Amino acid sequence: MGRRIGGYGGGSDPGSKAGVVVVAGALALSVAAGGGLSGGGAAVESTSPNLTKARSEGKKSARNGDADGAWRQLNMRTLRRTAKSALECVSHSHGQVRDHFARNPCKSLDRTLFAVGDGNNNVVVVSVAWVGFKNRSDATAFKKLIDVHGTGDVIPLATPLLDMADISFSGLHYASRPDGATIVIAETESASGQVSGETLDAIADVASWLPR
Picture 1 (cartoon, rainbow, N blue to C red):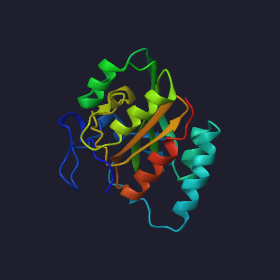
Picture 2 (picture 1 turned 90 degrees about the horizontal axis):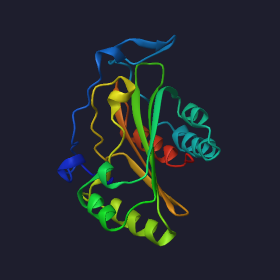
Picture 3 (picture 1 turned 180 degrees about the vertical axis):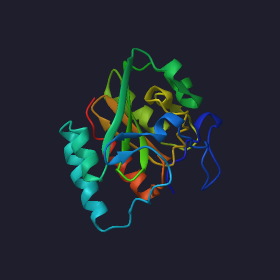
Picture 4 (picture 1 turned 90 degrees about the vertical axis):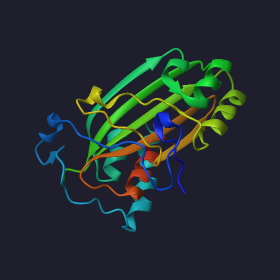
């Protein structure tokens, strides 16, 4: 079963999501020819045997810092993107994760939020956070905590920054990895159309390999 942080409530029931996904009216308009952000699109095919290969190739592009190339491997493209940095983590977290930061401050926090789409009105929001620590030991302790269901989260950037209505990240589609004294956290949610859980998981995995 996938990790579920369940947003501010500290977890969700098995198989449920914490938030209702809504897309603002502004995103019902096409962003570019051949691709849009309106709902009701065809489902993304996630059971294709090519998904494993696309995931692997996407991670290669991500490691090289090529986010657009990474999304292309998964038949997606960047629609919108925003990023912010912070020097502390307490005010950008909740739950036991926040308590942890109060006792063991992070050194840096960089967060990016993407909206990616497949051109068939299927849109995914992707949150990536790079949490820096003084040393690898501190990073390892943090990862052990945040990977456990119900312990809280580093709060993703708000989706209204992408001209979208507020979308809650449930933690159902989550990936994390260590990078020296940094922990990378990636989460995804479907924002429009029909995107399978397998595809959301693959996008989160790929996104976690993006460099700071």
